[in-house]
Structure formats: structure tokens, C-alpha cells
Image 1 (cartoon, rainbow, N blue to C red):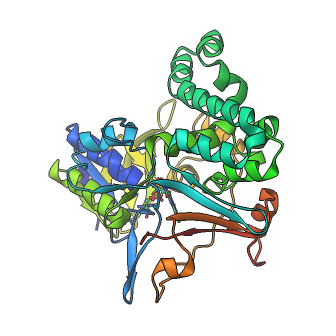
Image 2 (cartoon, helix red, strand yellow; image 1 turned 180 degrees about the vertical axis):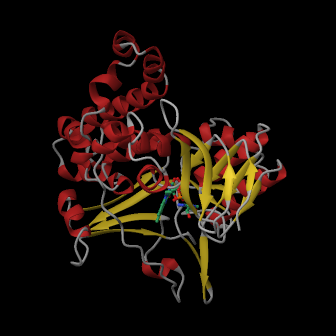
Length: 372
Ligand SMILES: Cc1cc2nc3c(=O)[nH]c(=O)nc-3n(C[C@H](O)[C@H](O)[C@H](O)COP(=O)(O)OP(=O)(O)OC[C@H]3O[C@@H](n4cnc5c(N)ncnc54)[C@H](O)[C@@H]3O)c2cc1C
């Protein structure tokens, strides 16, 4: 079958990114088509059932929502999309527990002040370093949202140094070098770097701003659980899109973004699906990975300006191996009292990463328990 219906925009993929983009476009009045290769919406933000158990696939700590009193970006977006009325969010009160065999077992609360207190209580000799480190996290994060964005817009190095000094000086340093500069206690460094695994690279390979962002965002704006799991959020986003008149097709993988190459630069004119359908559009938003989008889907040989440079600057991170486990006892029976627990037999993150790339038994793992 082949057709040539015209849309203001086509969104490839109904993950949370694609759903949010599609709902925003449709609610803004754009005739929008959303194409998803799976038979349900959500991408990673989904759940599945096996026997008596329903397993959440991904989200255990939604970040970016903030509280009613102290809202963050996502709450604003969800309000605009009418999603806050459709989904119930549950505030989590702990950041994480980290337990390293024969070394330490510490739980950090989901509060910026609380984190400082717990850290100082456990590492009194590092009090000044802890205060300085947390202040630097705060400054780098806030500057990355404000001063850095403004300087980028104006393309001004002077403005960057004036308004985002800490970001400019420390944001792109490795997280490890900033931790090393502030602390001598290896346990403290390991505890504070735990979120590295969400980024797939060891602390020496991640930018300080990315670690600071996670600590600050979760500490100040809290981690959230979604009642009904992330599938409930994905369903609500889809509903918001459909209510605004958006059209969706499942089991409809896009296999080509078609361009007109007759001008100076190729221009998107249509997309093609695995079923042979063609939809005319000049605007495509792809929720597929950037590599798939530019290398597999786009029908041009040359990558757009900036994209090849961007690809060269990145390194593929390590992948986690996920086990979905159904228990025949309450979690407390096994000592599981926190929603998120990092566990390890070493504090050497490079060894953790190295082992993750092999079939050797893991030296570190993360346990997330949705029941808690
Ligand atoms: C185990 C795990 C735990 C996580 N925990 C958290 C957490 O606690 N907190 C947090 O904030 N984040 C967490 N994340 C991350 C979060 O789930 C993801 O960042 C987010 O869901 C990604 O959304 P996305 O829309 O960018 O991509 P995806 O969810 O990957 O969506 C991409 C969509 O595009 C579709 N697609 C791809 N190619 C095509 C094509 N050619 N045609 C049509 N459709 C296509 C895919 O089927 C998919 O539906 C976790 C992720 C995982 C895997």
C-alpha cells in the first residue's frame, strides 16, 4: 500500500521523548502523525506482565518534576500537556542506599540539606570539602541552565566567563578530577559518584556537570515514582496527543526519511514506513537514536553539518544487564528497605565498567524495588 497524505510534522517513535514532542506539536495546532514500531507507546517507559508479576521496565526515579512549591521543568511541561491531571506521582524520600562489601553502607536522603548532613556525619574529616563540593554542584548546575544558555545564544565567551564562571571552569572537567580535588576519602568519592552508572561511563569519563546535575536535580527536586509505573505516564502522554487531534500508528516502523536533493542542501519531503506507506512532511522529529536517524533512516550520504563532529566526540557507554525478579516474600525479609540500592564488592568504578563489558560475574549492581 502506498499513500501520500500530508502532515505538518511526523514524529518517529512513541518513547517519552517522541510522545512529548508529538503532544506539544498537536496541542500547538500542527497536524501531526506519530509512528511507532512497537505495538504500545512508551519505548523504555513501559511495563510488561509475566505470570503474577507486572514489571516496570525502566523508571524508578523520575527526575525533573520538582515539587508543587518548587517545580522543575517537567512539571511545567506536564501541566501544559494536561498530564498532571491524568497521572499520580509519589515522592520518594531517599536518593539511594550504597553498600560496598567490607567498606560502608550509607543511605542518602532526597534532600540537599539532608545529603550534606549525612555526608558530614559519616565523613567528619571531609566537612569543608563536602560543603565546597555541594556548593560547586549547585553553582555549576544553575549556571548551566541560565548563564551558559544565554552566552551560547549570544555566542559570547566574555559573557560565559562573566555569568557562568564555575560552569566554564569546572563543568566539562571529568567528574573524577573534581571529586579527587575535593576529597581524600575513597569511600566518600565512591558514594558521591554512584550515579555514574546511569550515564554508562566511569567517573573519569563523565563531565562533572552531568554528575552534579543528577545529584542536584534529585536532591533538590526529588526523585518520583509514578503510580502504575512509567506505562501510566506514556499512556497519559498519548492521550494528551490524541485529545489534541493527533494521529498515531503502532506496528509502523519508519525505514526512510526522504529528502529532495535538488537544492543547495537536502530538504526533508517525506517519510517511508516498513509497510511501504509514504507520508509527505517537511518536519520530522526522530525519537530513534541519533545514529539510527542520521545513518540508517536519512537517505543522504553526507551527514548534516555538526552531526559528524558530534558523533566523533562521543564514546559508546557500557550497557547494563537487567534481570526482572519476582519474589515469593516481602522485600523487607531480604533486607530491602530502599527503592534504589547500589551494591558492590569494589570501589573501583573502572573495574566495574570493565567487568560490565564481559560475561564475568558482576562486581557491582543496582537493585531497584518498586514495591518499596
Ligand atoms: C532499566 C532502565 C532504568 C531507567 N531508570 C530511569 C530512572 O529511574 N529515571 C529516569 O529519569 N530515567 C530512567 N531511565 C531512562 C529513561 O527511561 C529513558 O531515558 C527514556 O524513557 C528514554 O525515552 P526516549 O523517548 O528518549 O527513548 P526511547 O524510550 O528509547 O523511545 C524510542 C522510541 O522510538 C521507537 N523507534 C525507534 N526506531 C523507530 C523507527 N525506525 N520507527 C518507529 N519507531 C521507532 C522505539 O520503539 C521507542 O518506542 C531508565 C532506562 C532504563 C533502560
